[in-house]
Length: 186
Image 1: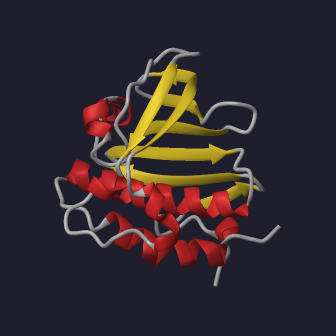
Image 2: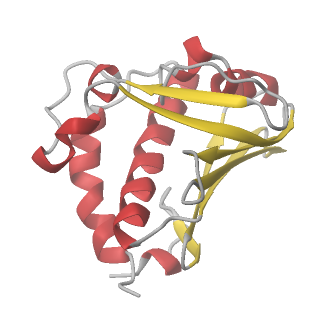
């Protein structure tokens, strides 16, 4: 089986550095519509998390996760992720904002915060969304964010296409062991 750092097909993330994962999706456009799903709380909560974003460099962001509410008819979360099903909040700071092409922010606060970058580009009649999550603190976090972004982006693609997404936790349970096997130990 190929490792995460060797994968860039089938919607899988790719390890681009020891502490950095990159994942891409082709989405129906236009870019302004995809941008709204990244930045507007009511649209973002349909695939990732609600919460206010101050879209200026240095602005505050808050992500309000309710993963148990993302999809209809889902399975319960795996036992080791049960705490991630209930409401949780993550705060961060906008590092860069160039609508509708680039949004970057810290994933958390403090010196151990990781960083997330969304790049949007017109491509092949749609929008190429590239997410780069860097400064992951360890292998466990890398597996978790890789799995999470993969599933959240699948839900976003379904929402943008007008399809009902498959169960969030069902997809996490299926993909987490795959990312675990594909992520190098060191």
